[in-house]
Image (cartoon, rainbow, N blue to C red; front, side, top):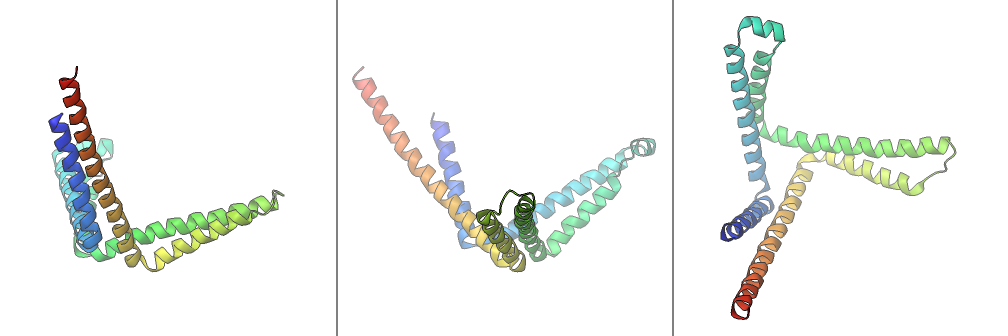
Length: 187
């Protein structure tokens, strides 16, 4: 029981610290994410290359493995992320913004298609789809600011969750101890 409480306390503390880091230093978190991703890509690339070299030529041909190409590509990706971390971070919200824009336009298309089939014009769905499209375009046009806002919002959520969990765990533990104490004194 004590280990479980310590584990809950530590996980709440991690949420709080990560939340504070995201709120106070979102750029630092972006950099750490890039370094971790780059390291993972390079390590996986090296593993693929070693695996490729350890495989017999006959097996490589028979199984049509492309470990060499994947290994080199992953190493290059890792180096690219290391050297161009800002550009990489900008690509993430841009791609998400593009996907949001696409879904908004798709929603408008669906409303127009339904109207052509005689199902009526859905103004509410069209308005929501237009707002989604505009939001996606804003994210694509200004990806760096939206990424920082996204990280800060995520940080606020983690911070609130960590604090709430910590308070709830403390209250629960005190209540449980009180109940156990009363049960032991008055069986």
